[in-house]
Image (cartoon, rainbow over all chains, first blue to last red; front, top):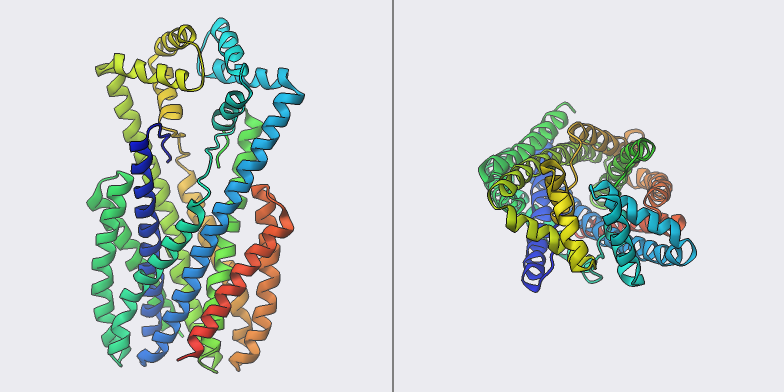
Length: 233
Length: 233
């Protein structure tokens, strides 16, 4: 679901919504998994201090896995882009006729006449950079990744996971009995999940209340399942 | 990182690698987070049974959050595609000149001469379906999502998370002392992370051993951090 942005305004708009997206990804997962873990443990142990330790261990683990995982995924995407770019430059050098044929097939597939296919292909292939950029974007479907984006995105997601995870866990800091803490955790977390689901839906452009209910439902189901399963032990 | 596939062979190839991708996503997260949680708790409690309960609660929570989360994200992508499709059909009906201008701008931006821009735009706009398909794919960058894909992907990711999570947790089932269980868990999980990192890298087309080491390092760091933080309590 990416949009090709052509001017500075759109570019700027995309960047701030990228940050929002990172925050929403990190926070809604941070709200869901530590919430469900704490709820599950509340079904099995009555002492909140164990739940606090488990919750903190989970938040550390989850934020590192999501943050660092996101960072490395971004780096991988950059390496992949670079290696494909190099290959395309090699190919327009080594097998220009085959590469021209691929450009022509693109124009054929979108519905142009043979005459226009040939003319358009000649014009694209006049400039090597323009030719390769075209192949990267429309043959391979690859957009050039922003090199600074990977690190920033990792930080945003990881920190948002921590902030999100603190919310369901905080009642257990203050209330010794886990069943009591669970009640407050459920209310606080479901309200936050609804609010974050609402913003998440606004950002992705889907009906906001329905989207918010879905996000809340995932959290409730995960917590319910974890509670049910842990209670069996 | 999607590829536009034009024939049946490529289509088939893409589908099987989609399943592999789901399995790798679910399993490498399943290996990482429950592993780190169990390691973290081993730094704070000596009885394995609490770690087993926490681990199972986390696996239930994580698999539901990832699986159901992935399912709803897929559904949202479909809804978004449909609503954009409807809007494009409306727009070519209501403001055809503006839409033609957008097609022309696409051809201008890839480097075609004014003459070819105009001809190509006329040819595209001759057929409404062809016109809208073009706008969806190349103006908005949206591919039509596979309607069955969302559910299948959710199942694959969720189940793989469970399978992945069982591996670091299994020593705690059999060994009463958590410090002893941790040793076996660390060895088994790091080996599995390396193997899955290797396949993950093969699938995404990056150097496999370097990729495998990165995935293993994330797991080790997450577990180390969780252990360190939980030990403080």
